[in-house]
Length: 164
Image 1 (cartoon, one colour):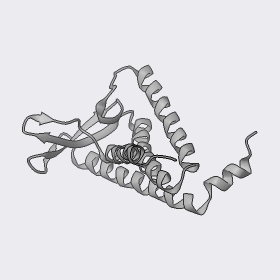
Image 2 (cartoon, helix red, strand yellow):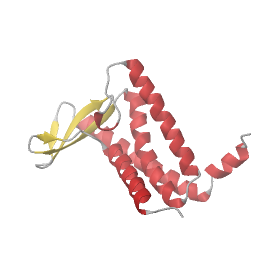
Image 3 (cartoon, helix red, strand yellow):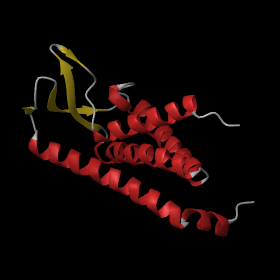
Image 4 (cartoon, one colour):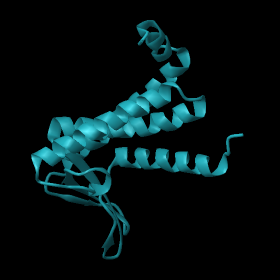
């Protein structure tokens, strides 16, 4: 049986407050970057250097434009799946050690930013265009960077640290 008091105590533990704060900071940083780009780059490309441009692209898929579709049914199913994954990551974070809480917080902060955009805009604004000459990588955003960093740290931890 679900004990609400136990859940409340887990959520409001002092150490969880710091990780919640990290999630919120990443979310706000992502929102700030996207709002700035949306307001400043309407139909424009901002040249940064020979490898990076800012170019606003609306992504209906998941990270880096994968699984993009014009079907609202498919979009909604993917959105529900993303929501469930975020909730699962929150559950894992609440029950993890401090280092894993840090990793999950980084991923959740980025995923929350992109999920917010899916709900509000029905697409995610991507704008970082990394390229080498005519080869362009997928256009991405700040949230994608945090999600990727979190996943890489988690995978490296799994490869390096062996549980005894």
